[in-house]
Length: 275
Image 1 (cartoon, rainbow, N blue to C red):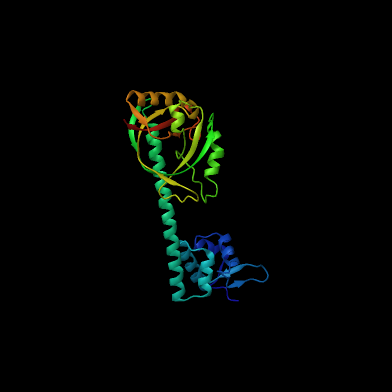
Image 2: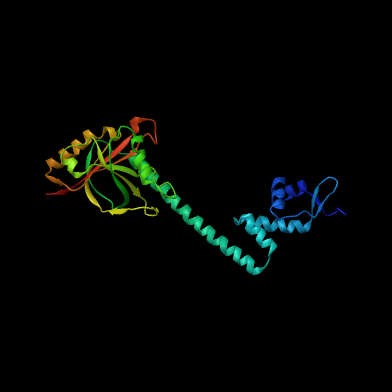
């Protein structure tokens, strides 16, 4: 056979900035067949016909098409087929773009949360209107000595979810109004998970309305909280306010983020109404 216009596999790989392994993979996938295979040595040779196919493969790969889809087109080439493949790939890219936009919003939200938590003014009681938020929650009696004591409840909230719904600064605990009035701060009555607007949660969730709360941030975690509950309740009493619901307590920075306990930040929010 005249090999004047044929090139060995290594030469073709260099010409198209591919690896020899990629060319062999394309052959195995049925996309690209050598023009000639030497029977004595098994050397593979490629010519202009294969170059045309390689250019098409590279163009399709640039558009993110999977090899199976490219093979389908090469074996059934037509204008209608190309339109069909391009439209399918367009929809796939749009879905990926939407998913990436959601991830970007989550990242930006977590950056903002960390910046806010890191700049916290600690040991100060502020009156703040908390935003309306969508939550999943469960009633669960538990005492928290370490963050890992929350894990069984977190696993229950995250059960049957397609993705990990539990992420930075989203899990909190609460003490009932009855126990707050009795100054019982040694155990929690509920665990909740704050959901982002775009989160899909496979389970019961509800909207918690905006509330006026007495809020306090301190350096520490759940086990350090009782003394700060007492301070907030004293503040509410001194101003003749009236409790109007259970507390919301979230560790904004804990040992899941840093091993330096001097940087831990926990926030307590207790809703109230003016008498």
